[in-house]
Every structure is written in C-alpha cells, then in structure tokens.
Length: 163
View 1 (cartoon, rainbow, N blue to C red):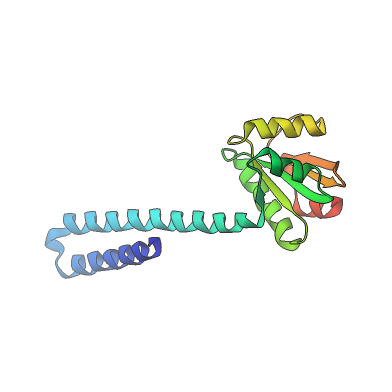
View 2 (view 1 turned 90 degrees about the vertical axis):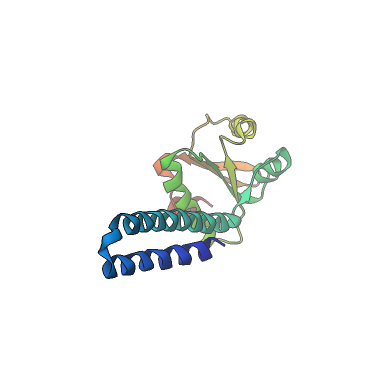
C-alpha cells in the first residue's frame, strides 16, 4: 500500500509541475500540491525503509521473555546483542551485528532491546557479572561468556574472531 501511495505522490508531483508550466497563473495552488506530494513521498519512503530494516531483523532472534534469554545464555555457540532503540551508536553497531549474522547464518544471534526489556537486560548483567551498557554484545560458548564489548568496539570482524 505504501508503494502505491509513493507512486501516486510521484505522479501527483509530476502533474503539479506540468500544470504549473502550462498555466503559471495558479502558481500558489501548484506549489501547495507539489509540497504535499513531496511530503507524502518522503513519508512513504521512510516507511518503506523502516519495513526493509524490520525484514532484516528476522535474521536475529528477539529476546522477549525469560525462556528465550535462558536459551541464549546457555547456548553452545551464540551472540547476544543488547540494543538501545534510542541510541545513535546502537544504530551504527546494529549494522555490524547484522553483517556478522548475514555471514554466519548457522550461529544464532539474539537481539535484546534494552529499553523495551529492561528486566531481561538487567538479568544479562547479573548472569554474566558485567555492568550494563548499550550497545553491548556477548559471545557465548558452551553457556559461558567468552568475550564482551560495548559501543564502537563491536564490529563484525571482532565477532567473527571470538565466535
């Protein structure tokens, strides 16, 4: 549906510019129509971009309850990534985690959204005896944390090295 509205807004924008060229007397109406079409186009392109990012997130397993958290922390081999949905550094680091997950589809990568799942995030700090930070990542082997990092220390290459 958003794609349809995007195409329609592009058509409306084109029509407004053509009409403005043919009859410049009503320029205010045409400029207003063009501005509205640009706004709708911008909004719909943002929605399409968000939907694409959400589809990529299916690569990761969301930790939304204690059972999934226990599975993650007791895994034979896994990566647990604590992500803040409000932090620009987390957005950047998230791309590194996705890059790692795409190259290693056989290794489970768990995503814990710290703001939405504060209690579970605190449990991770207790389980691994590591102070909470976000973004933060843990490499787990045989139920033991073998490496952890935060902020810009989290890269796909480092994850690959420690997994």
